[in-house]
Length: 487
Image 1: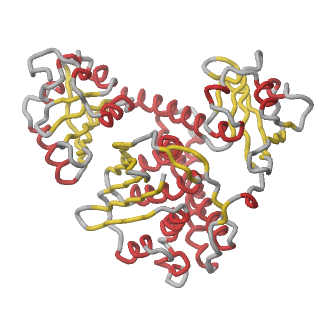
Image 2: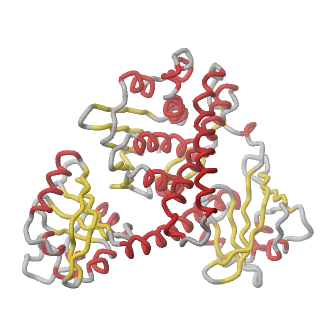
Image 3: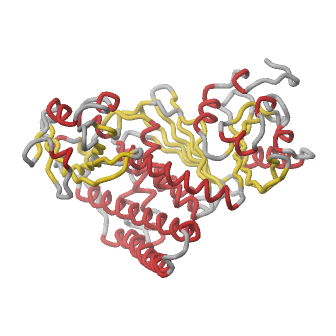
């Protein structure tokens, strides 16, 4: 190992793969990893530009030096706070080109069991200019993630050459070929290879585009063909005109799917809290939208807070609608399980962008630490995402400053751990979430019990996938939910 006086780089240090992976993937804000004494082990690519400094001298130096702190008081506060509660957030000053600027620092203690403790310090430049630039970068990243991992079949086609410029992950399931093979191929060749049939004259319709829906039929291994309603929109893809085709699956696949279990008796009163969860945010969206429309001359970043509230409220409506849908299917015994090959990265990549706006509205940060994205799963991804989503929503709404999510491969299982330091769960709620058959029993309780219905429903769905749930919650320590699923 390099000595403290050498001009080492972080790649001279044999960092664990989980640590290096998190450093390499985090952005656009700064991230630095330190050990228990405050010595720098590594950093992400955004940190040097954030501080406008030469990073070659940072490795194995004190973290106080790279931030220009005269004393170790800030460092000690971060380490002490993270040691006691797992995560701490403070405001401090950092130095850039000889001048100080306000920074928001979040420190989290992270290390797999059996390894020396270490800490991640997340750095956000809190000046107005930096916030505006970061907002635009985050919006662009979220749009790209949504385009890449949204549900249904998505194809982006070059209208002049007929080449597939982009395909999302679901395209692999429907078209039975990897994304790498789909890209840069003629759209007609792809459709002919999978023996697809479109409800128009010729496959060239994918180049021309239409705002009318067309029906696409694709043979499936299960025997029942997939039927998708395709809709086209003209977009710009990396600066070039393109046709974006989005397909909605309208196939009745229940006959070939795995039945979940017998129906559960739920009274009409169980619908009330979910219906209220739809009505209230819908009214708020109407009010906030009116505020934005009344001042069309204002720059977008001045209405950012209201737009984020609208985004978060829309997410609440979508969540409540999904709860109603799954409640109805569980109640009438028509819920089915459609297992496909996927991995942790694809599940979380489709799940987390939807939750970021809600977390920001609650002044909460969701940190993903030690996530093994390549861990494979054979599962119904929509049910898994719904279950994880409800547990994350409970953690975000608990009122803590941070929520930490880990996802690790443990033998033949994948273990998701969600930790928050907000309000704890009641003993009755814990019993309902951890109980094996509490969804039906919940209906026998009062209105207060029905408020727990979304989380109890999520636990019910997770167990239908073969998962196991364990929840620990106590004052001063927060809540730790461990959801284990066979991979």
